[in-house]
Image (cartoon, rainbow, N blue to C red; front, side):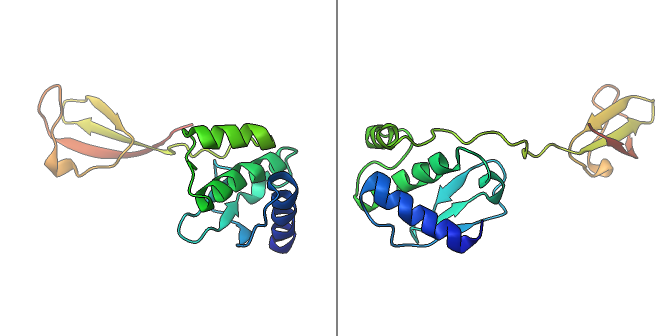
Length: 150
């Protein structure tokens, strides 16, 4: 699906489900990983995750973002917690949450440190060994390297 086809689909869903026109821009954003889409308050644009375009519930994701869009333009409660949002979302049949497609980032680094007395220390973040000491014995630390974390 191209951005032009997405724009046409969003305009069609807005007309049929909300009975209001969509007058702004809708596009794909490949930087979105765990969310189905987002509504930009400042520009009123909609962005969607291209990896979710092939899912059967993509139309529900579009409806979810259009609920944000139409409620914000109507100066009503457009946040997820607002009663207006929940009511309109259930009325048009939009998705409350985006499905998990396995794009969550996992920490791939695990740094292995060892003190002079042989105590092993593993950390997710790398740090400067000159600024810290071993928590068990107070000896100096040295970086042994990176360990694969899977």
